[in-house]
Image 1 (cartoon, helix red, strand yellow):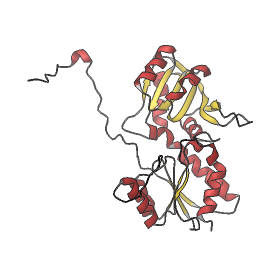
Image 2: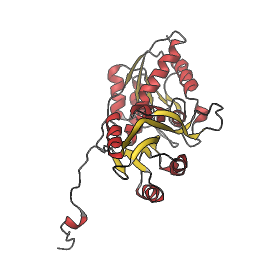
Image 3: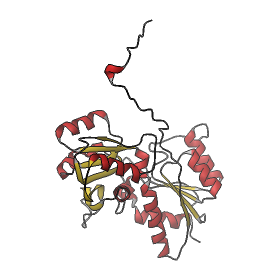
Image 4: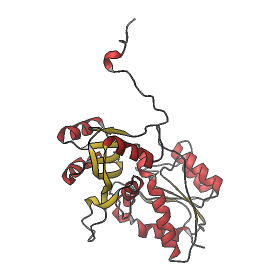
Length: 288
């Protein structure tokens, strides 16, 4: 039976911590390196409902994409939600392992899983890793659809391929614009607009698009933008990480029972459509 340090070594081979961004916090957060690992739960966020699921299922290890502590801390007291997470994990002998930006740039990584979920054939990275002689690692991916389709249909394709959230999927651009060549970036991707424009794609699928960068991108070119919830664009990677773990373990004669959490941990829980235009609204009297 493999122990936690063995499993950590597997993940370090698949998603080397050295490839994480300098500001990131990846690797083992808590857990006894000598503890046996039989059950592994995968989730995007290390939040209390996910930890409760791990406890109820009898997991020995929780693997998340997002870090629990991204900045330094001086306490893990249980009077904060992060402290309660740590206490719950340790009390129930569950390790926590984080694969964040080292999984973003991996081959396959987070953006590969996103591209696969929406039916793209991957042609290469959006921003190549200069240390990869094969030219396959890097941030984001560029892919192609089997044939062009209007932006309206493409946005619906993205919505159908990702897990449902309150936000749903929103798009910017000419609804009839033909979409064939697409750049994707799981998670927040508006820092890559210059690379997306240079790639000459028809559309960019990512999350957390802010008003000003999105507005400027739309003014600069006819590029279509498709914005989904951050959690939704990264959730498909969990299945990929699960497959990678089983493949690596099989070579060593190990077996794990694994599960991908189905809990929607996107923080937004309600969407209220706004039907009226500004001119249709009644003025609000703030000084009656």
